[in-house]
Length: 333
Image (cartoon, rainbow, N blue to C red; front, side, top):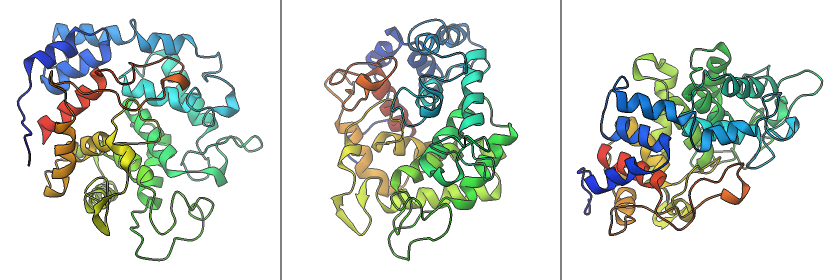
């Protein structure tokens, strides 16, 4: 399987730790080096996330109602709305108990979660409250569930309802059968249709994988198995019915943070976190390994920096975030 190795280059690890991003430092110490949370160095990095760099700058731009930008553009204001700030805060391992972070979680639960189904909607229902039932979509639901779990709300009944929606409605169709009918499938063929949208699958998997193994219900375990098999059938980024062709060329350009999109690294990160070591991952893993430069670093090839509240790294330059994700995947594989 190519020139991949589980050995961590100590120069690269030192580069990750020496940067000014406390979130990268914290995750390097914990996920790569395996240091326990009570270690003073880990505690210092964890505390610095909320006082240095990107997280406090994002929180400084928050409005009094818990949103960023206009309340009713929490999703459509890409990528300055509240949905996207929650995704970024969760990626950066912000403290979910911090009052401004919790206010953002509550704002999304209040204005985006469909009261009838528990899923998340692109628009607010201004009459009944909550999210607009007819505009529920799977990638948003997956992203919000993952973010809320990451921010410490896994036991909240509202989050549990959204998890139940994923296990009930999320599909893994591969173009072989008729398109599903009825709500929530018909309003958005791009999300469902005969071939389920890859992004919806990945974000659902990401959310479900965030649940600790000993707390996964049979329905969660089954959805994880079905979703993983869907991605493996595609060899992560290929056309399942013609594996000589790349289905998602953009997934080969690694970025951070990814918003509703995804890439090879994110998919591999989910699969390896679930314990998969499948030969159908081999080409994607080699793609990751081969993208490293001579210094053992990976560049930021894809970004939405010009559309973020706070820019994160620089396109085309070595990226601590992409490097961290790559090393997490290759070490696990």
